Image (tube, rainbow, N blue to C red; front, side):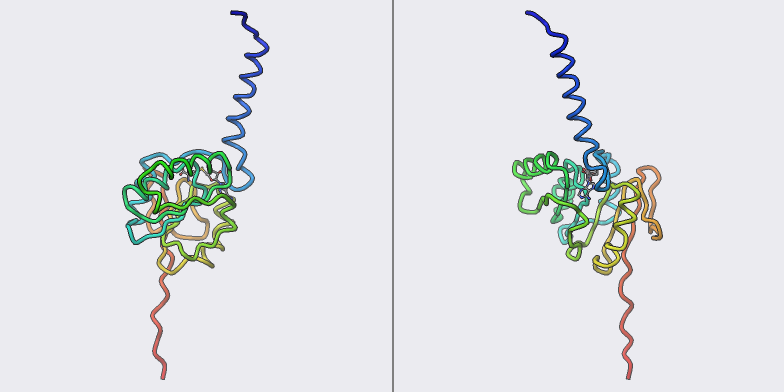
Length: 184
Ligand SMILES: C[S@@+](CC[C@H](N)C(=O)[O-])C[C@H]1O[C@@H](n2cnc3c(N)ncnc32)[C@H](O)[C@@H]1O
């Protein structure tokens, strides 16, 4: 069979372009693609004490490293928001073919346009700039007592309740409102 080196070169270039697109296209929105390692996901979910009563928002859901484990292992209701359409298609396919579709919502869009008021747990693995932009939104919208777990990057200005250096996970809890003082 005749072998065309130009065709091979073209295919390699296309392959590199597709991979580069997949990893880097979302950079400007807040992070490229890099799945959270399994051990870090498990630490995040354990520290946040995720359970069936929780609504967990995964901000930048990627291909679902956090989303599907939170629904499968901890039976949480999960909302995964993702900006990159190929990953959204993968997430929707995984959701449809898995047993916990009724507990999982996949949103295609920018996480900064999402309203966080329903979330009891927020998970994120975003770049530091995005975490900084996220902070005022978390402060304004998250209910008191909500838990926030971040892999790799801390939230500047917040003090983590726990930092696990082994899995590089920061755990925060939004302050509860002080008890109302009954004035006379
Ligand atoms: C480092 S990956 C983490 C993926 C996933 N959370 C995980 O743990 O495997 C960050 C993801 O956030 C997505 N992302 C970045 N900025 C975003 C934004 N503003 N809105 C929605 N998704 C965003 C990227 O497309 C990417 O899939």
